[in-house]
Length: 193
Image (cartoon, rainbow, N blue to C red; front, side):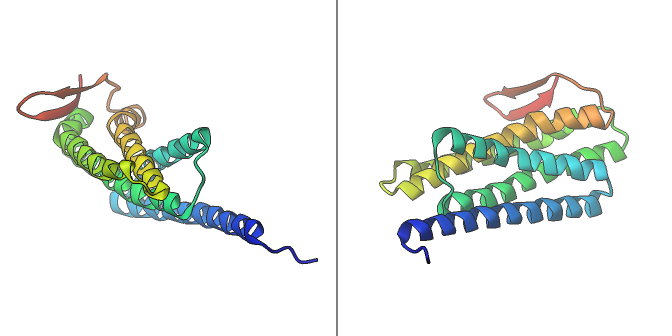
């Protein structure tokens, strides 16, 4: 007995896509962790970078499950794009932080957020607004891609501006502060108060 048909084929493709995405995500997390470890020479920084870069993806998978959004080829591309952007933002913060710690600055987390937080916020807003245009598409794959990528980018920003600094303060001995975002007419600043 040989099972055939479009339903069976669709199930095989879906299972293959899920398996490949999980395998690719694991390889990407290991590679990013390894590169961060080599660059910063700190297993702690590598672990924090991997956690903060992977967390937004897990949150979006939960949102997909909650909304019944299927894992398709177009939605799986979201994870690769968002992971790359999330890693980039995380590395900016980790690099700024480690440079300040190496110089002996006692407020390394706050200074890093003041310097990089505004840029991360503005780049994320620009990306979310750009991809959100696809939310009005008549093509469902474009709509799913747009809202999932936008949501992932917002989760990545929150992880990088709130969760990562808290972890840096907690696990790297910089003193845990209260985090706040202050936006003025002249500039954007994210800092620790």
